[in-house]
Image (cartoon, rainbow, N blue to C red; front, side, top):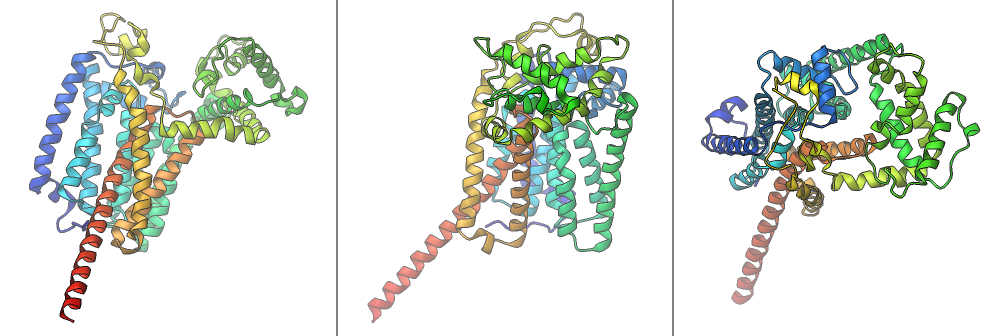
Length: 508
């Protein structure tokens, strides 16, 4: 039976409980062995196109960038201590593993699964090779997953033991997560709802809400100000406009009819004319590059968004690329929104549904091969990490292990859903203690919102799914334990009742 364990403060309990000390030792041994194995196979970190943008922004100490600036700030801070790529990967991996351990210990502290259930959870999460592969990237994925695990662990703690110190730290984590990746944009809303409904003392509640509004608002204002200084237009993220237009173009490319240029709002007509011409040329190709959701319309130099950018700035050779790129964000946001409204049924069919499928079986994307199959890196990587040349090497470029994870994630999601249904079927939402029911309600909300936000935001890939993998796997284990316990208890009660009835009949 899951019981609450709160006899000692969390820090005291985490370090002094004998079971915890044993598990932490096992955790450390597994993590160190896994890291050594990784560096034997891949002496250099893994690079993808985003890596060079992050490194360039860190080198230039930029306030904003194409991608959220948080990871570039992390690289900049880390470079104050060392430029070692091995140290960077080591830090990312052990940051992720440490945050995962904190999350799992939080579950054990407040929800007290059985020892064997917790051990299974810990081994499955800590020994997960996907964490190792993602930590080896010069990219924001491992740092974002780490911050997300802290955010969720704090959310689970707030209803049980809200303090002003915890709520301020929670607001800081939310801001850091958004700075690292905009997938965290829904975090403040979930946090505010949790603070508003789960905390009773008015003073603590108001401090938590004020801290969230102040820190998140300051971060948003900082971004709006710097984008206005850069492009003349206030926007939270220019990337959002590019992404929305890219998503819409995948829809428009597959609908049955094209929209005439005259049907489009006048400011969007030149772009739409170019899009129609491009789609006409794609129809003549034996293999179209936009058959599946991906990055074609967002990043390909031949795609209409990049082509229109070049046409728009053809007479200006002095303005830097980031300024030109940012200036197109509002226009592309309007164009993407117009296309989606115009083809709402196609949007559901050609973007939402395929992306929903990908949420359960995500594309391995860049995880599938080391350094995108290349033997070299760009000059900024050589300079930043003090390489002797741009040449890199690995034991193998084909990371076939990544192919198994879409299936694994699909199974974990199915297990999570079925265990949630099973929990309700055995009366868990009626009979389980309030703390467990409240935690499950929170996790159900986070899971649904995360799925919806992920599906709506951009084409889903495997490295984006590390955070949901951890919390769905952990709570599936908790739910299964409860279901098995209730089923066993019911079976024993039924047997005892039947035996009592039989004995009473015999006496009669």
